[in-house]
Length: 115
Image 1 (cartoon, rainbow, N blue to C red):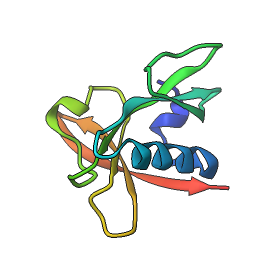
Image 2: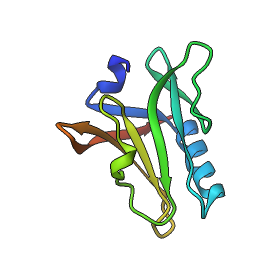
Image 3: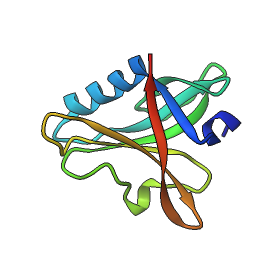
């Protein structure tokens, strides 16, 4: 995990956030799972097969919840790894939140989308 992923405020490019939210919507009522890949600490791609390639590293693991809030389940958090959770259980608004384990408890991280 890179130092950039441990920063107080995490940033995700708008184009990548839109891609992830679109894939979560299209998959309904099923959920999606995958990884967000980064190069040089910058998130760049979403892969549903969970594989990193071409010098990319895993920036975060991702899950969608078609009918639950954007809070992680117990099996969706790994120590030392950022988790992104997308909720489709909202009226007209999709929600994506970031989480880490801290002393075995989920702690929300600030996630911003940038242009």
